[in-house]
Length: 326
Figure 1: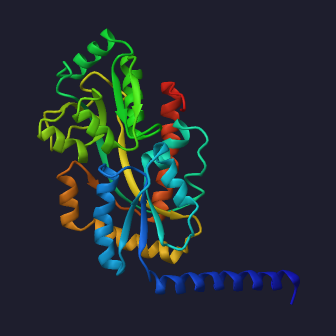
Figure 2: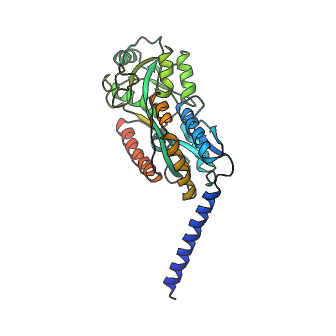
Figure 3: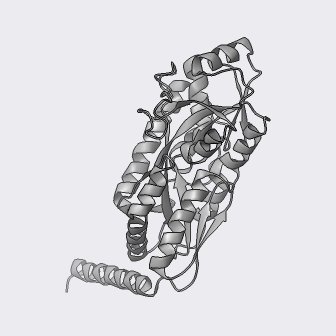
């Protein structure tokens, strides 16, 4: 046997052993509880979606999925924890447009690579933001808010889920589009930011529909516009940011579940099947639609390509808007 044939045989045998080990791992998986890291504080959309997915996946997997909130540094703390976890399928992370598409453009010294350090499993949902203000703010429209901000340069604050997050970017795009001087107040998640908005500690923020709509319905905050390209069926009278005079402020947040890079492909395939089954269930789709969210699923390969395209898109948006990393 020639050297080339011998090496080819060795490589083929090694690949077969790796595949067999992956299949064996998947057959016994899971044998203990699974941790799903959410890189945001409780009370926000990521936590709500994580619990919906975890509850349904628990039934299919036969093991509990424990939602573990690890907020901080605009998702970096929780996502970095997941990136460094053992790639055995027992640590997953809720990735978002912030953590896997925007963070490297909006934050400095990110300790992980959103693509190389993760094995994407599936998208689960997408939803837009709503620009909301405290009822005490004397502005009933985006135009009135712009006029108010221009009359009080540097005096209006807006909250976000943290530096480098998608609602931070929405606020920066709004400032850029309207030529405003507003001060960014980062929180450890959109939940705490909304609490301060309701309490009157901050005057405005962009918040996701799933958490903003209940506060709007209760009269705790006032809605001015939505960041999607089209109006929402849940609030048809609410204009888009473009319709309200702020073109370019179109931000839709997406959510998906990932594992650390190196997780056996057979385990990724198993998890993908459970996520698709969970998020495509008619009652889950109806539940999310009632909160302004669209249930989404994908193959691992589609999700990986989507992350790559989103990173390129938002890097370009940040660069063209002149937004500086923090």
